[in-house]
Image (cartoon, rainbow, N blue to C red; front, side, top):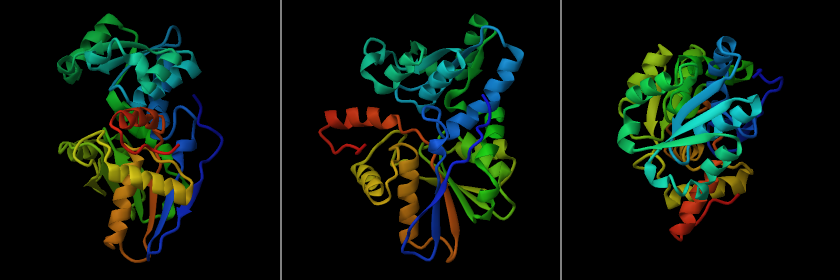
Length: 301
């Protein structure tokens, strides 16, 4: 993998407010390894391949609709690496072909191992056993967050991002907001919009970023992966107004919360705010399958 010789656009989202909002289109970095996923994997893969150039093998973890699973599978295909996904929940073992995310990952060469939720929760023991079984493999954490991932997020910040007062990103495992926090300018404030209801995230981010220039804001609507009708309406309305697709689990929730903050005038007048579009658009297909089964409005594609 090489850092691409192109930059993604930063576009302004027009607001009738005394603040300015911009969106950095990191979802355009790569068609299948988009946004933060690309950069979280970048140093991990380069470091591993430097040590194990022969018969490389990647193992990682995720749920049935995981953007990270989809990204690792796509990377494996592009770089000719064998990949194995440890998937949470044995209940989908015999029907994973109905799942758009896993179907795409399998088409990109990933093999699966389905484990019970109890086994999946004990990642430390699970990882230890996998390393015994596959001693030369690279085991990437769920969501891709580790020290090398945080270093990779540095590439999401450029000379163009230095002029903004606030840097905003969705937060799942914490690696992306930690990297933005670590490498932000001294005068910049970092806002992380939590899409998981996890009180331990603040300490995780602080340990990884080594700074306290960030704030975490709840944007999970009750739990990870929950998609409300209001969230769907916001995403469809945003796409209709600005021609930009948002995913329902990460960037869609962040942008919806940001707009609520604008309505409450929570930013000082004249603020320049930059939000990162971290991709994950493949997840729309799985979300729409679920919404159709529930006879609910779907996300327009």
